[in-house]
Length: 147
Image (cartoon, rainbow, N blue to C red):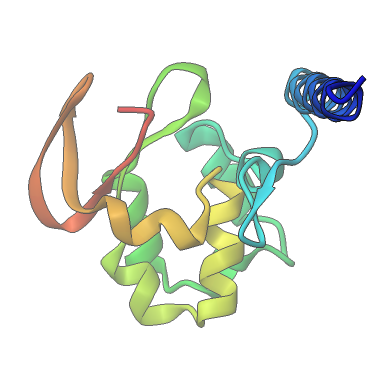
């Protein structure tokens, strides 16, 4: 009888752990947002509107598009150095013109429509996608998971 409270406690912990594990698995399988440290890990991918160079060109004609805030020179340079991988995931892009011409807030929107979480961008700077799964050092570029 002395062990009964301990067994009950152990059983309660086990049930709680199993129910939480199933809940997390359901959230992931339902493609719901997963937030860690205030950052939505699926947010940028959900906001993505540009999956190809042609999409970027079309999006740049929308009057309310953040892309319209860029000079024609930067837009053209960005398009000429833009590459997408399988499934429309960004592979590489030249980011320096974007940083020069857009505010931080506009940069967040700009990268989100390309499926990139702005807070993760610094981890990808300084590399360019040369070929699939092959990022090479290049100071003005980013190399993303679409490479």
